[in-house]
Amino acid sequence: MSDKHDNHHIVPLSYYYFTLGGLLVLTAITVGVSYFNFGSMAANLAVAMAIASAKASLVLFFFMGLRWDSALNRGTMVATIAFLAVFFFFVGADLGYREEWESGTKYAEVKSAAAAASMAEIKEWERPSPDLVAKGKELYLGAGGCATCHGNAGKGDGIAGGALNPKPRNFEDNSSAWTNGTSVQSIYVTLTSGIKGTGMAGYQAMLSPKDRLALTHFIRTIIPDPQGNGKVDAQYASILKDKDSIGEEGGASSQSKGIPIDLAIDQMLKEKKK
Amino acid sequence: MDVEADIKKYGFPQWFKSKEHEFDSCKFGMWLFLVQELMLFGGLFVAFAMYNYLYPETFREAHHHLDKNLGALNTVFLLISSLTMVLGVAYTMRNQMGKAMLNLFLTFLLAGAFMVVKYFEYSHKIHEGLLPGALYSFAANPSTPENPQSLFFSLYFMMTGLHGIHVVGGMVCLLWIMYRIKIGKTTAERFGAVEFVGLYWHLVDLIWIFLFPIFYLVV
Image (tube, rainbow over all chains, first blue to last red):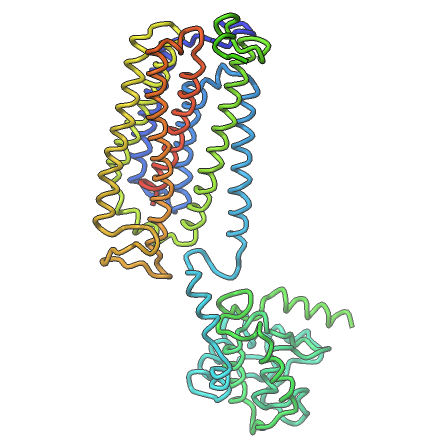
């Protein structure tokens, strides 16, 4: 129909009429399909974009003449689509892997919550209250919580603790000296930084300061005659000074998920190596 | 370097090797401009995708203020205008200038119709207070940091507004092309101008093909 050097390829007009027909049909389809829910916004969006891409292809190939045009112009368009895909991909990957908040969570909410907690609030939480103790109990007994190693009643007889050496602390046992002590500050430091050489990990990254203090108060309800003054006031003070630990929403997850399984396994493997 | 003299004498400006060389170069230049426009709108589309992902409920609520039927009507206007545009180019190439002018004029009218519908859509939103950013004043659904309604409308006005400016620009180009044909500067022998304005016009249509579903249809 056209030889290589003829740029002025005369396209039969029927191509153009059929292209418009196709475009109008696809428009009707995309409007019609928008009344159906394919399960999620992502699915609905995918369907709409697929139809839009089909329409765009018709415009590009027939109205804009890429069907009959040089490879240079076609290649320019393909390269541009590729660059747009890169743009979308990396932004999408970033958003998708942000663990600080789930989609739908409001950024402003998270930010203001982080700014809300102050030293005054933490001083508040140092005093045991029924609410804090109840919250601590909930965390202790929750999925993947402390009970897995320390037992439901805090006797150190939890299932996951069986392989650990030294065994998990029996909170009812005051006969041997506790490594850090039994004061509020002592237990908070233990929860935050763990105890070296044992299976007790530090949970600073997993639990917010308030959650750790709630657990502290609950555990102290199990300890017979817990001491008021511990050996770790200095450590406690320095932990609280650490900016990262300040704030209601601490660490990688906005909700405490308890002790991650892989962390427990890590500890058990470390113990086995000894 | 007298372009007019060159064209009269040789058929094309002499800094090109041949007429084909001139046409190919100009067409490639136009394609480069078009893909740049795509990247411009592409950035805005990424912004929309990002905020839609972060605030799905907000966007779901806000999009109900848009009239699906007006959006569909505008889509049909632009699609038909793309046909009349390419027919305008085709008839120019075939040296049927009467039909060419008619189709270019129809393209112009359809673009105008698009802008009229846009005018009604925008004035309704302005009246309701559904405006970008700090201008948002729709009392029945206030914009808060947790439910940033104004964010949706910022994106709506920015993206459809920028597109609307491109439509108006295209209308000006159409007038220019019709003038060129009338005074005999654009002919069956030298029709680059109308072909390239045509390419621009199809791009404007292409962008709307994506704007329409994301704002009016997807929930």
